[in-house]
Image 1: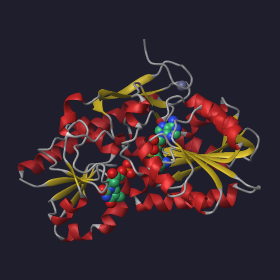
Image 2: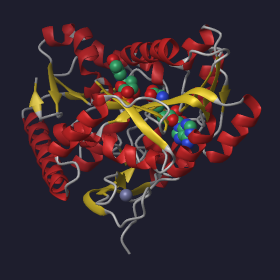
Image 3: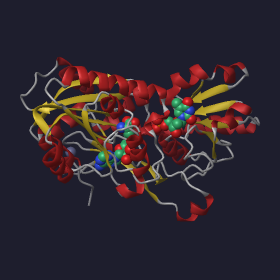
Image 4: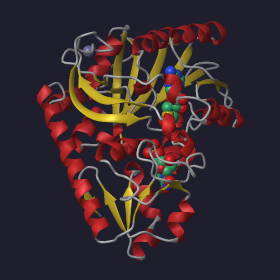
Length: 406
Ligand code: SAH
Ligand code: TMP
Ligand code: ZN
């Protein structure tokens, strides 16, 4: 029995399996190796509504809990990005009296802190208790729950409807999207706006950035598939804006149907998706071949460097790197350790292949010959501050959009 589309129930067409995969953010200690959880990471395309999605889903409680490893505010660039978003929402979308802003996946308060600071009524919905606690410490009102339609009803009866509903890198995490969309419809005032952003399918196809594909990302959105989803809930996409962050994201602005004028950018982006072939199965066959080629080229390079006796260290123990290391088979004999600034990851081992994760000081105190840029989406920020590494003869290895020594 083939899998059915989580949005429109049509049988979906799997196009690439990455094989046995652990939890992307499941950094662990040696005593946990024996009980490590694995699932098959496989992606499929829905020929009817265009939604690209995983075929198997990890229980949400296994991914989002009191030891969630991803703290949004570790990246300065992202902090600036979300400060701008908050500013944009405040100036363009909060006209009325006593406005109310709701955000899902509010994490450590990276965005809502700007509303809290301005005394604007807000509510963060964040099921991972550790990051939710950091947000509360910043004065951000946070409910430690998973958002769905039932919670939306509770919020409406307790706080009333919202002027703006935000979500960054979270909508694609939620398999039960119909419940989420129904909840947003209830929660938004007639003039309210939903603004959310996630890694964009068009960028994944164009750059072969297959490392965006991991357990937390149940969906890979396009303007076409998002329009279809929210259209089924009486809402429509009124604007879209490509974002440079996270290696290429799309911001969707969505409102109740007919409530706002639809920007020409929406149709323009849909036409672009059509010319990219995002609606065609052949595009995904091609992507699958490109993914295999990327893996083969990266492994060839790493094996050559090992043969030459070079030291290679990973830079950034990203969730994305879990797909790359496990799919390619990058083991500690090829990459000595991964440097990461997040305390909760340090001293642990990377999921599946068990490469040690060490504090940044280990990188800076004894530069390797090569740094494998697992955090390629923060590449500009990182390379700008690592001039001394390059001056000391160090080289960067990247694999998006192509495997290359930079
Ligand atoms: N918005 C932040 C965090 C993204 S990580 C940023 O862009 O940096 C995704 C976050 O969504 C995690 O903190 C996770 O705990 C949260 N999350 C996962 N499922 C959720 C759900 N159903 N409702 C609300 N938040 C959810
Ligand atoms: P992300 O790609 O999911 O945002 O994760 C980035 C990871 O990279 C996070 O664990 C922090 C780490 N990192 C560094 O170690 N050094 C850096 O300079 C940056 C920007 C990120
Ligand atoms: Zn579908």
